[in-house]
Length: 587
Image (tube, rainbow, N blue to C red; front, top):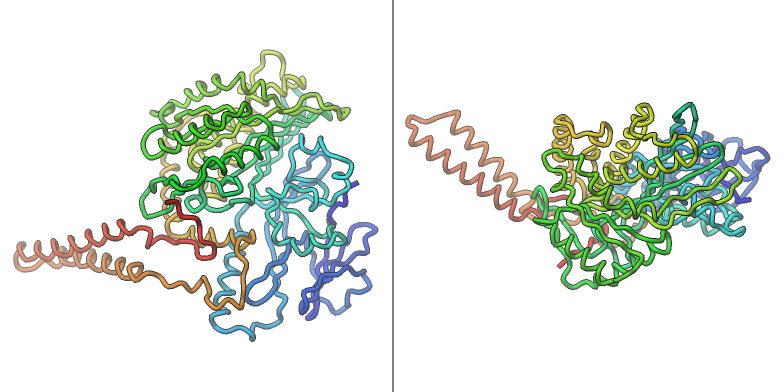
């Protein structure tokens, strides 16, 4: 049996050490961390000093090194999501970040400020909703992957056996992972979305579960992380699994999403939609093949659904994607281009049925995973739909929800929940649960990548496009614009720090946080505001003649408009760019 993580913990703190006591039945282990030497050892309960300050915690997220030294991050609050085959699934909702150091007197003023900024970055990531864990179940693997494992795999700790793509605290747990004897204290945490519902159709009760697992490889925010890296990891890669549990039988349908897997970028520059740039020098085929080689190994056949526009600024990306698939010539890949916006313009979202009909036979061939109540595998999923749009958010989620419903229809009929000829869409109570869950999934994925809730969720929730939904999409688009241009640099730095893409070195002679802004960043916005203000003042305090007033208004008006266009032309100098890890620039 696998070494499960401890469920009940107490954190004891003294000036010299942290003690994390396992309080599960029969447990006597205490994880001890020396706050001076940072040494991690295993002790027993009698070694905890009575003078220690004690509070309950629900897991160790890990440790991180900042300017002031090491910090211990623990989960202090959790909420129950539900039960998964008798395993409780939790969402972590609050954390403590505890300094090993008892004082900050050893730091200079600049170091103090840098350390404060790094702590703010760390807390920013921790405050993003969507961290999930279980102390008894491996959330990082699909049902099909878990069914095809060796006895040795079953004996591993949750940390050792976890799919490292989806362990968001893998970097934070690196010290604990090096010591197998403390693995029961090392809790793998998933980032994404999980929802569970007990449902009933025809008086038959079943559990319906939706899990989205966000990859920590090439993770980041919308405009700063696009395409793939040299290892073939795609930006905003998410594995989504829909599970049904009925009378001991379990069925699963898996889909993936991820950025267009070539080397491209779309850096913010104050324009509403920056122009995508495809690299002219990178070896696209090398990265492309690395990406799909790994996808085929993990998932099998790949049915690629590319939803981006086939005209305008998105057209070169669609053409490049199609060319790469054709050049690779793999029998394990099928490519389908569906111009979502063109096909569904004028709110004709019923035309999505064109795509569903086009891929219906392929979906039947891919099938789904099914294991009966005796534990026998009845069917395997032979491949996945890999869907994408530009962000792999709004259009992608709509299509994934429709494909998942079609698979669920087949599963519930096979399990005997639905009668022959019954349609899932006709089950009003379940349809409401289903649509809202997929809309919530869209919002979670969008907030984690783009900083706002998803667009087009009115269709996902109601099955039709509404005018109110269009208004909400406009509002979310404005919020995205602001965040993408003026706060995403900090968000990207926060993710890079959390995941270990950047490591703090307090001996570094030049702090990346102290990079001075270009003079234009401060001067031009001030000139524009002053010029616009003077233009308004001249209108309000008109002179003796309109000729004089008009001259002043024209002067200041031209000055403010001219400055605005200079700012727009030099947009890249005014956005909030990452400072910790230099993001690749596409030539």
